[in-house]
Image 1 (cartoon, rainbow over the protein chains, first blue to last red):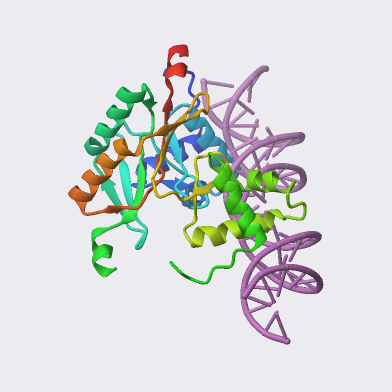
Image 2: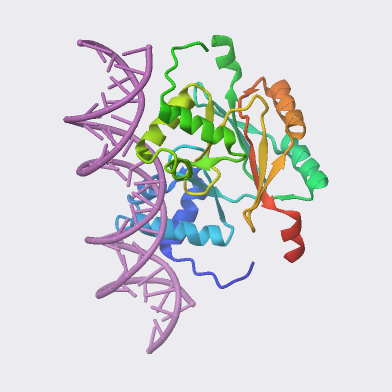
Length: 131
Length: 131
DNA sequence: CTGAATGCAAAGACTTTGCATCAGC
DNA sequence: GCTGATGCAAAGTCTTTGCATTCAG
């Protein structure tokens, strides 16, 4: 964990941006959110910074089927989301519920789960009543 | 469910190809697998056929982080995969295990899960011993 | 000072679109 | 015959790469 760590301004900015984001962001969104502060920041630098941060396990990437992958801070606490297919609203899902499944799988198949951000799709309560 | 249904030769070929595939395929793989039989088949037609089949819920798409999304036949039975981050090997995951989690969520949060293909990442048994 | 990071521009990979032609009903 | 599907080529989107310059340690 204590590899040499070069935190350049670009990497720092990307990391901070993701820390301040309550939600995952695409590379373009990160870039867009930072150009104001760092006008010279290039999209390719964002990509390279993300690669760097991912390699060091500070950031994780997930493809939730939106065209571009989304990036987020790796938190100590795994967290999960329920996405409503109708209204696109995102709900939090407690890890405790999911943990049981993960433990089960690890016990059954000796497969060590590393997914720390599960996204499940469905229909939320308020949309159910509308249907 | 009984909309007018135009099963052209291209769509039929794509559907059959996916039915015969034990596993999900990218658009390029589907195309590659069919050009032998249908030399004139165009990649864009594969994409359009997939869109058509997805809209009719015969095929589902999933992005498992391989650069391109993968397509597969919608089966009555939801099924899930464990993907090893180290060797990229894919393992099947029984629905029974996952069902418990889904039921839990539906009971707790009144959220009706529609995800029928879960992909979890981690380290498989054989790679664990190597680490 | 030195190697690594960045900006810029160009190349790449994958997907979508426009249009003329062709096939199915 | 009409309507929509297909082939082809071109455009689009997102991501990666090469190279000269700049920066961090």
